[in-house]
Amino acid sequence: MTSTPGKPLHAPTLHHLEQLMAGLLEGVILIDPTGVILSANPAALKMHGVRGVGELGATADDYAARFALRYRDGRKVPRREYPLLRLLAGESFPDLIVEVTPRDADEPCWVHQVRDIVMDEDGGEPDCLALVISDVSERFDAEDRFEAMFHANPAPALIIRIADQRFVLVNQGFLDLSGYDRDAIIGKTLFDFDFLADVERKAFVKACVARGEVVPQLEAELPLAGGDTTLVILAGQPIEVGNRDCLLFTFADLEPRRRAEHALKASERHFAAVFEMAPVAMVVTQTDDNRILQVNAAFKTLTGYDDRAVIGRVADDLQLWNDAGQREQLETEIRAQGGFRGQDVRLLHKNGEALDCLASAENMRIDGDACVLWLYQDITARRRGELELVEAIEAVMKDANWLGRSIMDKLATLRNPRPGAASDAPLLDLSKREREVLELICQDLDDAAIAERLELSRNTVRNHVARLYAKIGVNRRSAAVVWAHERGVGA
Image (cartoon, rainbow, N blue to C red; front, side, top):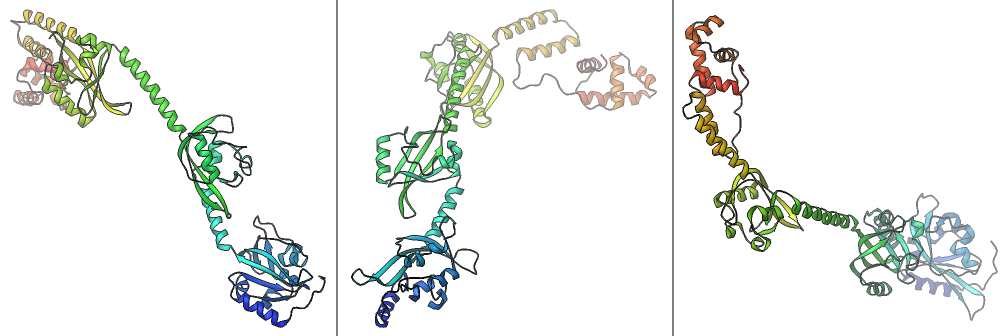
């Protein structure tokens, strides 16, 4: 290395400079115009992890041999571009950022922000050159942590620099949401990619961006790479990135919610159409007070009431149910179980006529409100036909034997059906011998014939018959035959 010798720096002057440098928080390295390192203050030594100036190197070239420098993007700093060598070459470099690594280390140990100072006398040849160093490692560590968190955060976000309204950072969440590549956004301006083109209170938001102020949560249509848009809610928060004032914008994708709302509205429209067109009478009531909200055409036809007479009222106001106690029990079941199915109820027509119905109900939501949907299937005509059949059979069977009485029992059940009663009792678990006895009874054999057929004594047969009667709940042979035939035994 060659350089033009300058005037030598007198020892008293150097001593005074060292006294001044000792109290500075910034690091200072002094070199003379020949490249010799004259002095370094304690802050500069600490920023290089050394104890004495000799460990920095005797000259600028020696310093370059002991410390490796990289730019922030990871590129190696060429030897001729080391700050000390550029200082000797007469170049100025205000606020240059470099990463400093001792030659025996694998990773950078410090991040330095350096600037040059040239000391001369009346603009002549320099007497002394100084490299002023600020340790910005913590700041850049914090920025690195912020960037790592920013990119790892799944919530879509981007950062815009306020001074020129350019995008400086964008995370993967935003790229996934918008469909853009990173290169299509980073470095572009808000004019190039105007994600605020379709936002609520656009002028207000643009003014907030220009002033670097908080942007409150607002809905917007975010332009997508394919030309479509998606509904988002966005907000902007002032932050500082790289000593520059910026705005951090975060986004929440509302498109799934919008689609769900559209689907819900379509579903409610379909429900309204089906509700009105259904041939079965339907009523919608409020869950909390059971007031009627809607009735369909079939209900109005069934009961004789119109909308004006029923909407906003409760069943007791209309005396709609023949048995208010039964209705209250069913309302309690709805609250406990969420609904019920196929209950026999009796409604009253507007003119007082009784209407036999099968009722079902289910909790549901309409427009977000808790409601109950009631269905009433009119079985009045069927029930009337059953009763007419009962009366006809009763007239024929007045003098009938045990079979007549059995049929009468069934007709009584038809006349007064019990809600929830089963239509057929389950087949009992008969033993093999009991089943054999029952089949022979169905063949009209008496105890003696059964004993002979099964090679048993008559007392044993009588015991089997007694146990059989007890199990199936009868007390005579004819009833046992009916019971067996109902269950396919001996038929």
